[in-house]
Image (cartoon, rainbow, N blue to C red; front, side):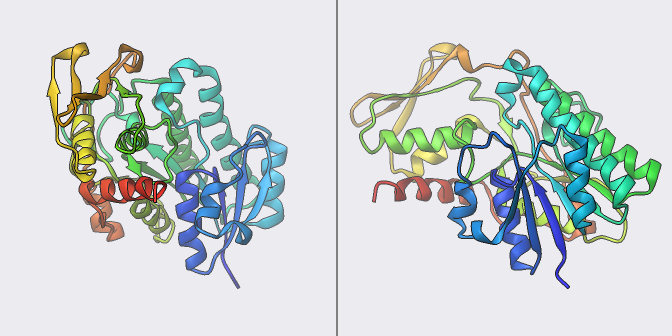
Length: 338
């Protein structure tokens, strides 16, 4: 009999990659998307798997709706990827961010405990929970210090997952994933924004790219690698939490430079601080400008994963480095102009 998996947030980047992975392993995959979702599931269609998913539009705020599908289907595994996941927006909408990222996980965990206690549960936690870092490399034992409403809301979900595991002996895991990107990333995320804009500018677009803190450093990986870690967490004998990352950190500036290099652009930086610009040397076109509009009220300057536990226990390591990731994303954007 096929294993049954439920993925919340299935229409997002990670939902699409995870769906593809689970289908390749013979799973029957169910998905929950918001009733207000309007993207027509283009990511699932990109992988040609849309017709293979059993989609449900339910409100994760509503316990009765959540519990009904769990009662009816008795899933082997549930992956909670649903979230308001853009950090910048969480400052503009702190209440809705808190509701989306906190209430849903509680409803799912309570439903599992009451009606399907053998179901294994994965919670998508985030490196943003570390926030104002206390240790140079962040592991499962690093203290949390979130610096945004998004980080705070995800920390609630993380601790609820741990509490249900310890209180009710449920198989619940949290994956503390560092930044992971792909061509299917939303345009509001900085990596996608960089690659989209610079590729368009190399193909005739006039508008320059506006960014905030380009010296902020992140541990970036490829989403396709990271969903494998999610899957592996639920295949273990005992539930636990794992940090997932590459163990290499790079600045937003470096990401821009790698993108421009891949696009064969000769460029230089000019100015300092808010006046700094990246210029194309062939015609002095301004490619990148710094804008105060994109600085966060409280910045997270540096994140770097210590994923040694995942390597030891899950036998997981990333298959792609940052250069590979940039190449994948740039090639995808260039294909739109061919």
